[in-house]
Length: 391
Length: 78
Image (tube, rainbow over all chains, first blue to last red; front, top):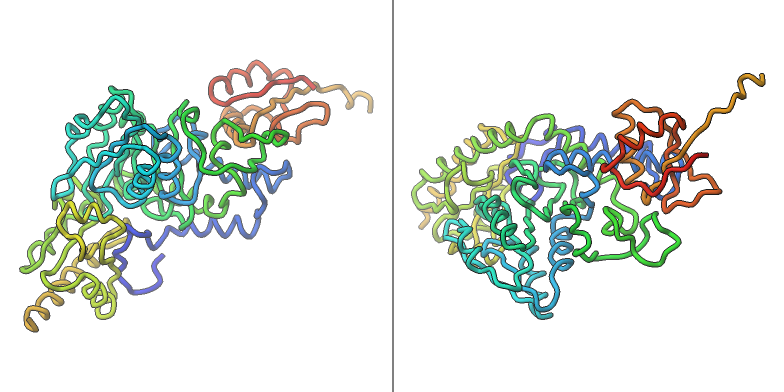
């Protein structure tokens, strides 16, 4: 699977490598099918349609959703979040979110504020933890939506989704989660967690390609959710109005079928391996990373520093050394891929106290090995020691 | 020869979208019920271009398998 000798620790941006099944499914579609799904009754069009259906079924199983048609495909988690947020909120509505959000949540909300939507950002602890009681306290009469990340893309801290979902349900408020960092890597049960809208992307822990993601929409919610785009769906063609049913209401235009083929294969790989097994391995790697980096003098490791309560993301900084310099050294001298800076989440960095320099983020995946983590800790030790000598 | 021409009677399930038709296909396949995806016959009208053809005698079973799992537009006898 892996063809080069780099140590890839940027899985939170895009997972790599991918299971062979992912690109094999994509190659199969490109070579042997290629047709437009649902636009004709010929065998290749139907075969393309089956690829979409298979992927919906696998994803529904992964998220414990009964009906696969509740999953609609979009290009990534950002589009799914824009659809959920902009599709639900109207001027005069109130929305609650956390201070650990990615800009894919913050920016649509800030734009909606200018149209008369009120937004409350509930502060999290400096470790990135969210207190569900603070969410409950923020609920008002006109609160229509609570949207939070499932796990921070900066420090990996997991949010108390089940508790928030329960609170949202009790108050009749819609609940949307950003599962960009958890779908595939952490167990998700939309029923048990009371999730109304689940935004996910294909190219991270679902081991699909870039450019494909989706939104799970709880049964009946399509009545309240406006689409982002309207257009051809291959259904109700005699009407000039958008269909009102799932998934066509939200899937206008020719879809990214080759992307869905890869995503479906990636998600099936996860089901075969088992989320529990993936989670156990990533937890082990995370613990190694937290302990290894934590033992180096002059380094700050951010977040809750508890592998049980975070996904495989560890953010750190070396005092007085800029994150981008560290990332460059890790790449050029040690072949280690990391990501420096603000990770598209300025609010989260303000919360953990690392704005505006940011941190260096290391994110492991299912294909990361313990040896790679050990080498990375040695590399960071090396960079720190060298800097200390210079300083 | 006339014997072979013995009329087999079919019915079709019409759907509002290809997604529903393909979801129904999966459910029938799982249950081992014979079916064929065909373009919607000209004299019928449907929101979606394909439909599922089945042996008329299987209609009750098909209704049962699809009930509450897939939205059906209508079921017609050919």
